Image 1 (tube, rainbow, N blue to C red):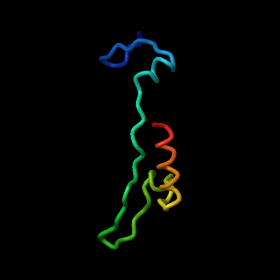
Image 2 (cartoon, helix red, strand yellow):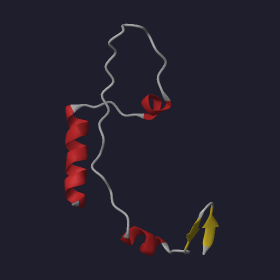
Image 3 (cartoon, rainbow, N blue to C red):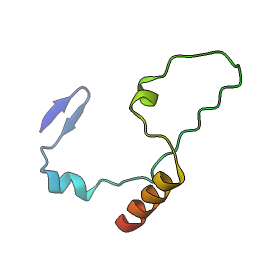
Image 4 (cartoon, rainbow, N blue to C red):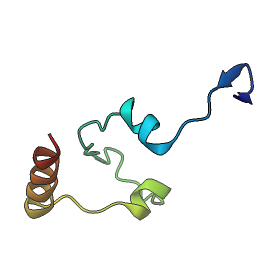
Length: 67
């Protein structure tokens, strides 16, 4: 058992951990500027991929293939 703060966690293998894990649907973030002021991109925006019809189609196909 590993002590993490107030919790005592049993050591687990990757396979045991995956048994209790889930993958949620992909998220799409909408970033609409209502102020008209220029702003710096957040870390998430700098690492993000632009939403296009092709990217959305590919995300949808990937998620459906995993179901």
